[in-house]
Image 1 (cartoon, rainbow, N blue to C red):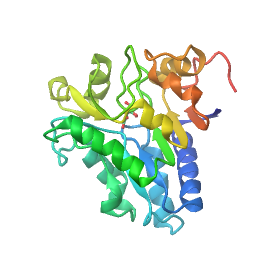
Image 2: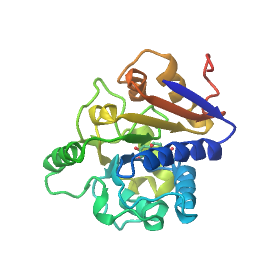
Image 3: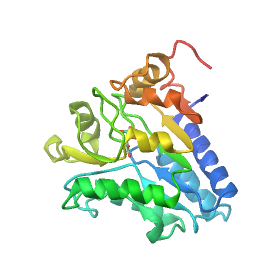
Length: 245
Ligand code: F6R
């Protein structure tokens, strides 16, 4: 496990982009696991810049996103399909057929989730998984609970996540109550995991993940058992750590 602490969120994001770029330069047909939310935006901006200056080529890259809300259309401005299009895909040369995002509108969500896991396996597994972290320690939308769920699945979002994501929607009532998320098993099978956490509202989740027992109540804590995980933190998110690297 590696932990790096940066002055601010912008630098943590640029560091994440640097590691993603290194992965793509080493293996142009990398399978990338991608995240949405505010945290990866500086990383995506840096990747776009690297692409537009001619340094980075996404033409052979394949992506699998972590999650999507249930019951909003891919065109909805708050859907993760829309987010990825706006924040990354439309601005780099990744092929649309190489992009995968869970279908939150599938008539049979269980079958669609199984097919999503199977597609990742068939592609050869995720080389590099980019993660943010929820204030409640979730990764993907694996919410605090009694267990770690292995495969892609439908999740009831916790009240904490609904409130945290309310900022993207007009009212709290508009925030979807369910999502489809990659499971902890699929995340743990990624060959490398990069978790980016920025801002003081993530400090407790980061401390629990790094310094308390591994527990499904703080799902990110399982990452400590991953053989190749890198935590990229800003000072604010590292603010509650008792043992700094
Ligand atoms: C997003 C995802 C979530 C977010 C987390 C943090 O695809 O899987 O786990 O990473 O909710 O969100 P932000 O970055 O908006 O604070």
